[in-house]
Image (cartoon, rainbow, N blue to C red):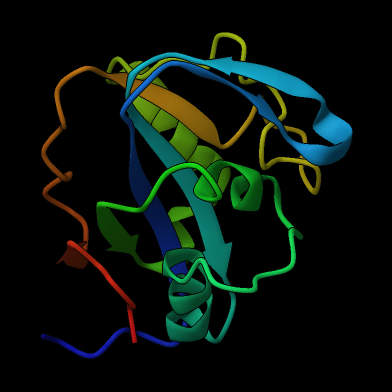
Length: 143
């Protein structure tokens, strides 16, 4: 596997196997339906460590909104993009391409003004965009 760049924007592809209600800290309760979700994040440095944290469940402190989701579901794939792609721009692009944010507003976007960084992709796992610089499949630990 290629080495993970030190910085970048990433998409965690997360399957939710059964509809559920998620309590996400101060964000409150979210209704999640069965299917694939994309969580868009960014790391200005230490991307490998960030991805490893997202793919490791044991003993993790709940810090980001996505941590609450990852208590119930596992990352199935990670798409990595250059940092210049921008997480809000990438989330908006996924939405233009058919992903939905209904009921997911503000998830993962407490440090910006966009509509949210969690999107519902549908019941079929999507293919990664062609401009991703790296695709990590079945990450058990992304280090």
